[in-house]
Image (cartoon, rainbow, N blue to C red; front, side, top):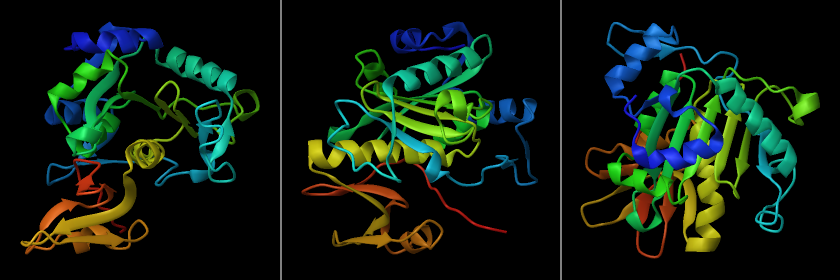
Length: 279
């Protein structure tokens, strides 16, 4: 299924059947798959409309971070950053991979951070076509980002909405979960069809990596720049107008939601727009 040879080592370690991967499908192909799989339907404008089910937003209380030598003294543990143990993570990961086994899945590769010196290659594995379509739109796209999967420089996001955890056995709070493992460079998501968990998982990764290791300030804001190089930042909670304010016709858009600020520039983490609206 058009699988790039350079991805094989990382996927093999996870125990995935490489022959079942739909890899790097085009937008049109992913939309056709989504409709065929009854994940959603096309509107009269040609857009893909879908129902993410129970979750129409993130579930912060079900987000965890692996507690190990790397994160032990570097994370502000508490109600926001909840601990998850090594053995329990590996057990849950094995269950998710078993859930995927024998079924076709979607593989998407790209990267985060528009500034090349901070580029973070990503491999996104999903059971649904629409989740892969989301990753294609959200993250930056460049074939050269694929090469780092083999040398373990990138992160892997595994998103399986159909897999439900058993809290008593799996030590999650609910059937849904999002877990960051910085040692294995994995974001593990289950039980929720809301694709914003993919987005915020990688934003959390960058919030951990960039300030301490690269002297970069991660920001939840939109940004644009004027003709004289003056940069404006717009901060606010989700849905409060950052995207609208940044789309000034007289200024160049840097991005509408997540950015980094280093010693000489402000750069976008993402490659797409994350506009929200309510009906």
